[in-house]
Image 1 (tube, rainbow, N blue to C red):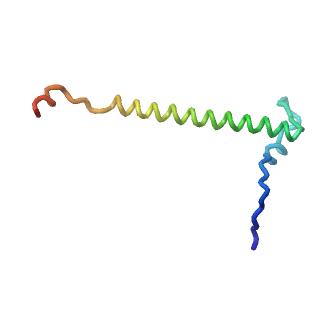
Image 2 (tube, helix red, strand yellow):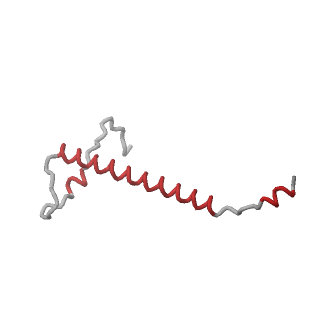
Image 3 (tube, rainbow, N blue to C red):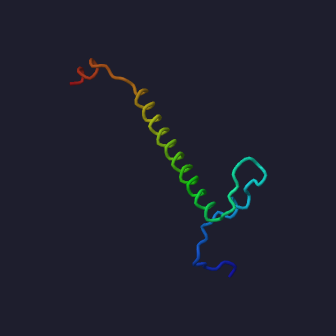
Length: 81
């Protein structure tokens, strides 16, 4: 059996921590706990923006569908009654 169950879940973003640009003008965080804290905040902001964009797109599509509905005239509806 190649894979086994691991009860410990590592939630630390190892690859983003290791791939930080060291010699640039951006801030490098060498403390792993502080890095994880900042990383989770950024992840939450990205998810929030993603959800907000999808919500706005759905609203726009609904509004577009409502404005492009075929309009019926009152004379057509009264003649059927």
